[in-house]
Length: 159
Image (cartoon, rainbow, N blue to C red; front, side, top):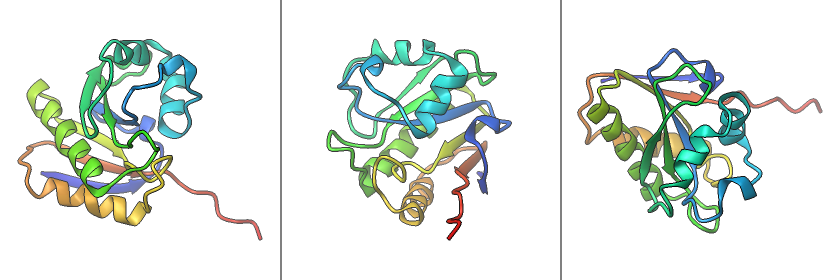
């Protein structure tokens, strides 16, 4: 498997499918004020992927669900439940999310997949630790495609 780590915008990647770091789908998407990756997806893809996801009901922690990409050019969006009901990520939820997303990519024949750093936003997990967890999850997976881990560029403090 070819793994790349880069800094940029997840939605600008040249891949077949992207991953949305989501939640367990307890609260209807239209009641949430998404932020981070989910907000960017909603702003550019529209609400269709979230309406499709809503039909799945509650997600298990670490579960992955494929939807359409809405107005985006990807072949789909894989939404992962990387955070629990208390908005916390864990090593297990991050690793399960990566494994389950890769399994969907393999099953559907996607040759490339881009991930945000799962759990490092609203999941309150340290970004470096999350990235280590994501890489560790790949150790037990065989995937012939390209895996891109995309760090969002953080603004430097002006002080």
